[in-house]
Image (cartoon, rainbow over all chains, first blue to last red):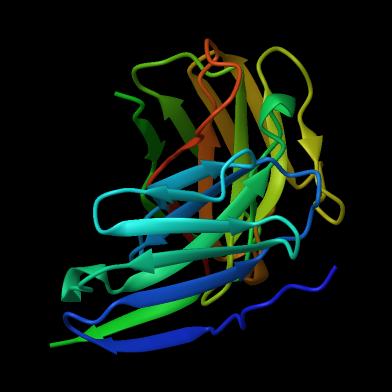
Length: 113
Length: 117
């Protein structure tokens, strides 16, 4: 099915704003999803994950929403800070299969103060 | 816990030479490790799945004779780029799954920047 929510390669926000980053995933059999943050020259850093039996999960300042009907994932960052500036990737896999994570296209978040 | 290291962090080599990149799980055992490649401003692309004690499984389009993977122990996988060329210049990232967990998070290394001149 088609995904809703436009994937934007870049997102610019002001410090203190809330940020929403969208991702469309590809495999309807995927049951495990993760958001990663990647700073320049570094490996991906785990932010938050969600399994397919949930549609929302909250962490510290971050919330992940999962819409399985349209295969859409979003990451909400509350009170965005300059330190949140990075590239954000969603990733998916079939958890119990032990397969590799498949990464979506990234979104570059720029936070200005 | 759950730390993955890579060595070297960056390497410059001449065209035609080979370079080995190591991926180690420091505080857990990893039956399976994964190798990714990331070109500038692009996403991580899976190259191969490395299983301890068996041959690696390569993704379509990845030459197994060019990218040699060895996973000789539960804490170490190596990727050797043979006869490197400038187009092999990229950021190589490994990840590992905890052997004693049936599911869940994969842990990523810090990446290795390869530049072929």
